[in-house]
Length: 477
Image 1: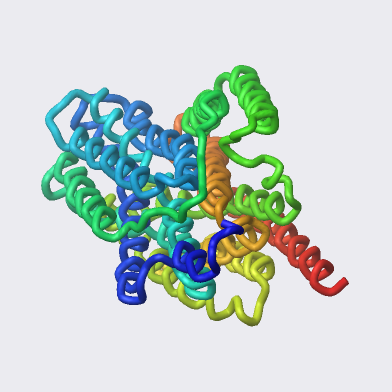
Image 2: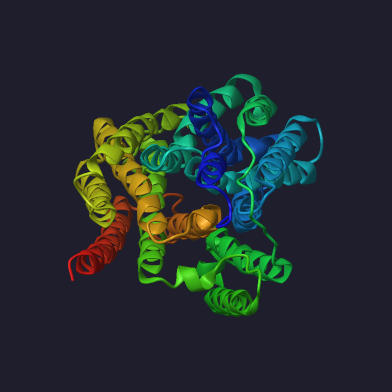
């Protein structure tokens, strides 16, 4: 682009008119919300799927796990494709796959087809990073930063939107009706993208590292399998530890492949930049803590009174507990772009991690009252919203514009792994606190899990403060 007139370069950088930009922003938000909500549909429907398809709860759990797996694998692949000239086609094709998968979940087909449909729906999770790339390319810099922050938040609170609505539809019309919601909204997202997504700027190219994608898929499969099979850790610890070692080796092999590739799936050299590496570490550990608290609160709310604690809420009512999470997460997401003008992004990460830690403390101290659970979920939402809104700023500050989708896609892979481990750690901690012959853990096990979460958020806070200190030393040598 160095030989082109300045006016032409500007036109290619921001090819949408102001009126079109007003339509582009809500379209980006809507698509990010839809793919996040649809991918989360597996969580509230696991029991209904097990009953409807006559499978075990462990098998039904794969309706969630397979979506997370396909999303984690698709995210860097789509991020690389989105960095090239065919980003619009990539977005439309991906949404078409999601719509087809949604149709499979609705049709009266066997359980295997339901899993295939859920895998196709999970592919849509990779679109979040592409939405950020579109915003960075086609909106003015100040506007794009705020939009990217909101896209990051929307991708989190989508679960809170989809959970209670899916649970209600499942109670009223069965599991197929609940999945029908996914078909409707994904079809609407496809039409929205077709009408609003602009072409990528010229002069870009993108190639997919197939070998890297295959090895990454194998490593992530092992991680998510180990996260989902909690009984394996309690009954066959040596096997679980061996598989964990294999997963680590596969990740190392993947990193070597990426370093040697001329067209890497993820630019590992860029990921090694201290700011990016620190942000991803904060996302990984913070993700463990955030999803751990989400798991603890929803499980505690549904525990029957006969256990000596809990509230015995139905799936739908327990889903309503997520409303404060979504509302306050959205509030934090809208406030963060304004606060960023006075406070650096790494400090916002640290502050948000402290807020999430406060949510753990509140859960540990005041969970005997339902209002306490709502308050803890609201605090969690506010912390997660602020954390998610600040995270892109840390990474994109040292990332070329053309690599936006790729850089953020890797961060979302890290987040997915962190969330999966958070869920697994919560399950293992509660299982360790369950006495012989008892169905439910002791109440003290929840306190132990909360302390683990506080520790995770403390590490996240320290990592974020180290990032802030490094940025300060770079700007004020």
